[in-house]
Length: 234
Image (cartoon, rainbow, N blue to C red; front, side, top):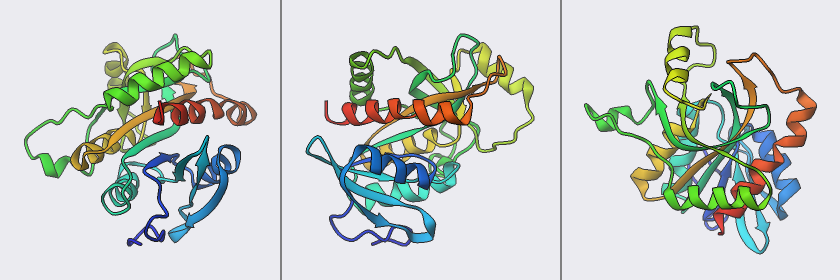
């Protein structure tokens, strides 16, 4: 048990999937895990542990933004023994060719600032995914008939950010999408010697203005959980 995670010793699996929304964690646990048990509900952040194809898996919410994710990722890895942590969430696409429902595997995650910046001082650390996990996720995508987009993303520290100049610069440099957590996850995992990856579903496109309807979100988000689960045990 830690300050923010009420799970006891051994109740967190070595493989953890982290959606931002705790209710999405509950949905994913019901949908993909066998014998899922609630192991954390401290401060309303839900975490469940069960089995998938005989493997123990925890699905635990992260909350929105890098500060929130940093708390849970640090405690899950440092104190509860998680060794593989995969963020599963939505993102806004920056490239016009990306369609709603497309899957992005985040090879790198840039940011303007993150909770870990103070640790590095003057060093501009380059957060990146675990190479083995990234390869496994690409193979898992192919097996399910999905062609993922692999490349860099941007982790923003503000949801409502009126910086069209920055968006244009990111797009021009080939950044695939924007979300709010992956860069800090990659840094925390690197610090503690764990594996990390972000598997993201495009829910809107900032270039085209397209937005995914709520019903379509429910029908397509399962793909990224399937990819994350298969890649964890490849």
